[in-house]
Length: 392
Image (tube, rainbow, N blue to C red; front, side, top):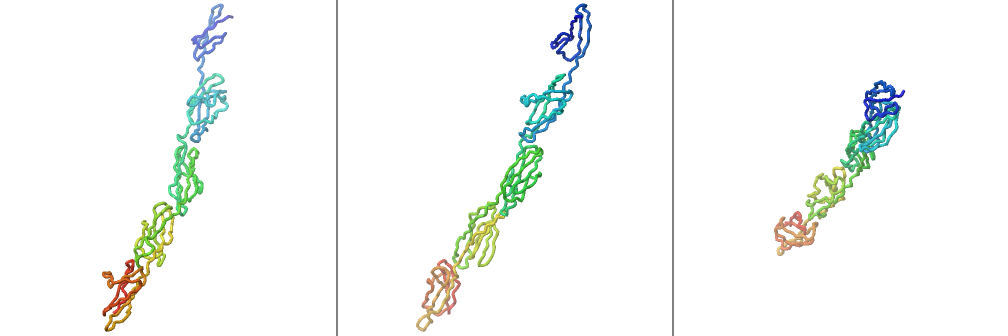
């Protein structure tokens, strides 16, 4: 009735209390029971099986957008039934939520509120056989935050149309769609170019395949009106019929800011048009009333104030007989002129090789012998009349 017990093999982890061996690793053992009085003994063989570790399956869901903390995974435990604890550690081995109690009756467990990154999950059974196991899980994320840059790629014209906004997205999950809101609305599509826009405030939204959204704003404005100054090099021609005046357009600004074209319009005494031309100077102009129309590539139009170029009245020379000749005296002639400018000179040559005299409005020519006479008159500006009437 008094027995002793021995076990073989007998690693250090095994301890004996009464007839109970504890701390026995898995393996095959021989237990010897000895009668302390008779020293009779009997052997018993027993196999301690290896415990089966729980199997952990994790199914991750990526964060919605870069920097979000809405990553999650499903935690599925198999090969064990009952209660257990789990703890999640981040890449720096810091516990994320601490020890969490769970049970395989709720399988899978949904773990939420995770940033993107690598995690390890440790499962510890809280009932026999009290095994633990570890699994890893990666919560995915875009490499970079979703962003979009929207730019004005063609300007609104003075007709308040033809504006273009081009948007280019980067980052996020890729496969982008673009939406325009504001002064005009265009639904989401893969096209990031929006055309035929009027002036206004716009927002371009980009959406990636994961549903992340980023925005950028663009303001389109109507070009400032074209302004310019049209000036003639003279407002009074030197001579009647001259065509040596010019008009220059200066201080041109506004509109597209370049690419200007110029058109000259004569409104009186006749109507005509010259241009359009790229030069801002119009030469060879006679007397008249003009304006300049400036246009550009944005359909902006500027019309100058009228520019008036005047001319003197035409010089008209008149020759009359003041006194007729007698047998003792020569005839006298009177030469008069109107028009032109200032004091007159006269000559019997169109080239004025010889200047015969000058006068303010008329002059008397004496000592006129028999012959044929006619004269040219030149004013202070060098304008020359057609020849006067002829007197014999």
